[in-house]
Length: 201
Image (cartoon, rainbow, N blue to C red):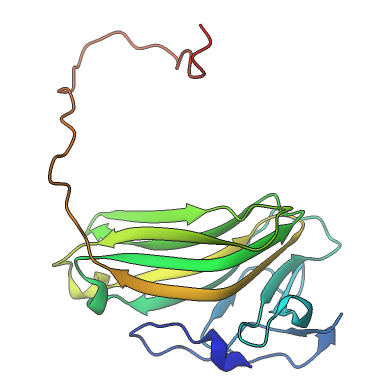
């Protein structure tokens, strides 16, 4: 069953042992090739949920236990980025959530030697399965030590999140042919708190 969790990535995936215990039909533990971080086992659980799986796509669930917590549990892996240089990384999956106030699907990498970037999407709670997509441009000519990126799924609240049918794809980068010209920065003007952001005045 776990073979369906193989991500299309250049880097070898690091094995993570499965716990063979079961709770509510869920085979607990992190899927092979993924690493779990945070209070797993103490305040959160994780595993394949047969009730939300299909024959083709096993569904992974991350869920909080009875103890209220704001700590974060994360399932992630680091990917060799050499084949993505100069391209758009597209990280997508089918998602579903119940009672989860703080959840994220995210992609993180260095954009330059001194600037890291993260792109993230929340998993909508209380809806049926839907696909969400996170994208980021991976630049060329970064030092060899920076030619990697992280992908992950995180929960930092009560509730449950499910993910399945994960895709990691390389898309061509298309530069804007007619970028919008912005006014030059003007220093020395008086500053104010943000005003009328809803256009009601």
